[in-house]
Image (cartoon, rainbow, N blue to C red; front, side, top):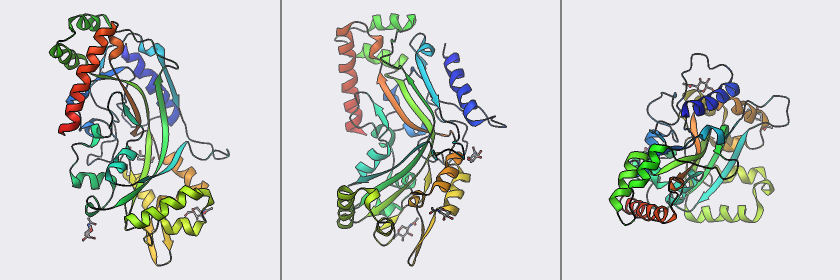
Amino acid sequence: MWGRAVLVVLAAVVAACGPMAGQQQQQLPHLGGAINLFSRYGYLSISMRVVPREDKDLTWIFREPTVDIFRDISLQESVETFSDVTTSGAHVFEGDFHMEFCDNLKQLLQAYFRDFTVERLDRPWRAFTASWSRNALARHMGINSSYVTGQHCYVLVRVARHRVSAKLGPKDPKLEPEEVVEQEVEKVKVGDAPSVNEFVRSYGSHYIASYVTGNSLYQVFVYTPPIYRTIKDRFKTRGITDLSNVELASYFSPWSAEHIGKIQVASGNATVEGWATEHLRINFYLFTYNSLLKLHENASLLRKLDSLLRNEALLQLNLRTLSPAFKDSVKREWFHEVMDNNLKLWEVNL
Ligand SMILES: *[C@@H]1O[C@H](CO)[C@@H](O)[C@H](O)[C@H]1NC(C)=O
Ligand SMILES: *[C@@H]1O[C@H](CO)[C@@H](O)[C@H](O)[C@H]1NC(C)=O
Ligand SMILES: *[C@@H]1O[C@H](CO)[C@@H](O)[C@H](O)[C@H]1NC(C)=O
């Protein structure tokens, strides 16, 4: 059943990128696939490509094992692909450029994983980051580890290029469990927590309801709290388009920032990283540094970037609980209750 689903997605990807000469087929997420969040909490960045990794094998985006538990998923998918923008069109970039103010480290991680949601998890970013050491965190965010503790504030700047956007729907999908799953649901008894855990071990806790893949550039600017507050207030009252170019440049220069992080490529692609180092350099008074702000209002750079950022990383993900497998509402409630307890335990312990 899911062979077909994957084919739909792969066909779409090939159409978007042209022939994938010499490239292996990428492992992508597949809609409706169920994963066991409990066995991976804190470690999801190992099996989903969301930050640059040491291993330079870019042939997979998603390699978390999934189980198919719903019938006829392929009939309910909607998959949209975004090919390179044409050079003549008014449109220069397929995706978004965005900037987020983060009062502290926690908000920085929250911002980075803003587009990752996990039903019934209040802090979904922890499912990716709870296992990160201070050094790992610094490396993944592209900043010097001396700014990972103490009193610092951050601005995350990101340019995300979408390639494939897939979701179940368009409206509420009608999810019917496979027969074997139905039999397993029968064995879950209200009041009996181990029976729920047994079910989760076999079939998982959440399924993939939607995702977006592509690639992104991101950069973290580090500030002392007083300067950060000044800049944040300016943005609140004016908005980016109302600020003069000199003002904008100075906020994102060593003039204001305590530290300017490296420009990172979500997939870790070295070619793209090299391009960014070479083309996104800014000279501002005595300073020379690399900045994503260079892309602001520069159509030719954005157009180039549009074609450089390919389908290599996971940009958005929505995981929903397997509750549609439970037709009986009392049993569904019980399933959620046990899940909530387990999730809370994880959130507290890691
Ligand atoms: C990080 O910053 C400290 C202090 O500013 C400096 O001594 C150190 O060399 C920096 N480390 C790296 C990897 O840039
Ligand atoms: C855009 O960037 C390029 C490359 O750095 C530069 O030559 C060009 O002048 C910039 N264009 C604008 C409108 O700033
Ligand atoms: C990295 O990106 C470049 C530019 O889009 C692309 O040509 C190249 O194939 C990518 N590298 C790998 C290892 O996928």
